Length: 232
Image (cartoon, rainbow, N blue to C red; front, side, top):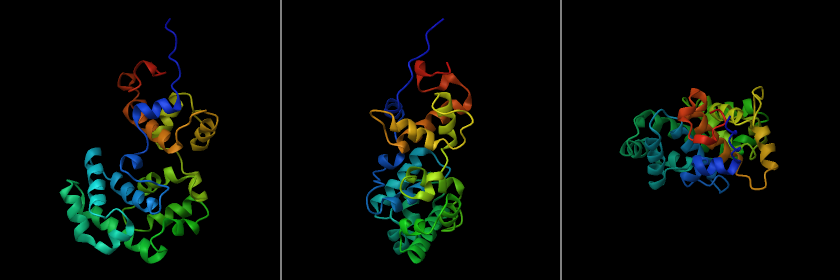
């Protein structure tokens, strides 16, 4: 009987499958204005479109100086729609409306600051509701995508659950118990014991890719880990 594969390390998984998309899009979440830029990117990335089209749209907005809520609110609809269309985004018109409306409300009611918005929220439900209220179409999937890498920034975001695909992959790898509904805290605890840990946001993103490609499909032949897949 063949020996089981050696367990894959947290950092190795990130190196093989990639980290959080904010870094790939040149968005520094810790920099001033980083959360605003990530919100705009998260709205774009939540749309149903090919990955490359979504990334192209984010880069097009950034290249035009339209990736921050204050910039979007000042520019208005037409320049935003035009940049999205040039990037080939299939939902340019409704997405532009959503981005401009959400940005304008953030500027008018929270001085353009997500720290200001989050400061008045005591729990995830209140915080998520305040973000969703920025504009119609900012749904739960967008809110959770936005909040996942920001769990440590705002206490109310600490309850944000793992990406469902990431959770399935973490269970398959033995990093979570099947009954662990949240999971982010458990993974954070594992990372705290690791001598060379990646960021939780990077690990979650890598797990989500793994889960989407193989674990949720139940098809080990599609697993990007190859012979390192513990389910094979």
